[in-house]
Length: 389
Image (cartoon, rainbow, N blue to C red; front, side, top):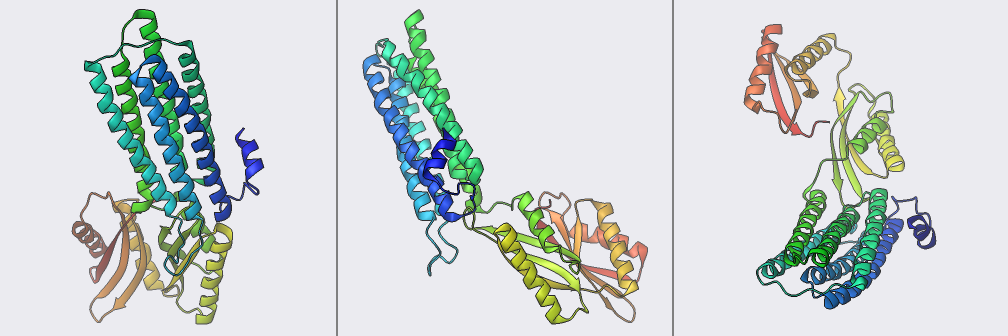
């Protein structure tokens, strides 16, 4: 069914990096969500009237909130597809994340309201009425929500969309919630035990948890999460395709919305290379990243001395010292200033955020090892806290 809908409504559906195609995915997801959830709301509201069960009515209004969320998703993808302009030079892609956050907030609010009304029903239970039609409606709702979960999860994975994956999570929680409502109705019919309020409370908890999870997933890219590890490796490998690039470091990827990424990186080249040749290598690397990975990038050139045996030996020893302290540590921007009495080694050390040793202690430790190797050396170290892959 998913493939059929994509074939009918989205041309070039495999070109998911294309903002226009991505926008059509979002709009399709929104239209499907609006249509299905309004149908489910009407049917469940009818079932709630017939049975008098607060859990059924709560589940119905949960679907109504989902329809509202789908409208937000539809609008979010519609706006996020707008091109860059004077006020938004990086486009409007982050609107997709904001729409996902609004959806999550709506889910959380609905969960709180359902919890309040359901707890009240525990202490003041009302009479329930069993109906085969209501059972059929609830079973049909579970089947439809299961399909919506699979549909949105499929689209979310294709686009790597937090908003769509949040919607799929909400659909899955709806399946569980409706199943609980159905079981409470069947239990009342078979045993006469009324757990309507308890079932409604369980539904509310599921809804609330789904909202919190969705909020967390959509907040991460807004707050600034680390670059995807696969993308980071691809960017570095693409830059290093030129044999003149000795190494790369300080990669930062800024996310301005799905499919809208901007990166910066430092590339090391031999210091004695002709400036025009070095510029051509960097310029070509930037174009290669853009064409192959769809990511704009700005590359800073770092000159590296490669033909001085003493500096090469000091660099090698310093690298060994750093890796001995912790294999996760790495070094870059190594330089040597020679004085009449001392040699000053200057370099950056990349340290994981969760590294337990303080910066000052680490500097002293590295210096003490360097002194053991050569008492005439002193290290000036800059600690660079970063996400270490």
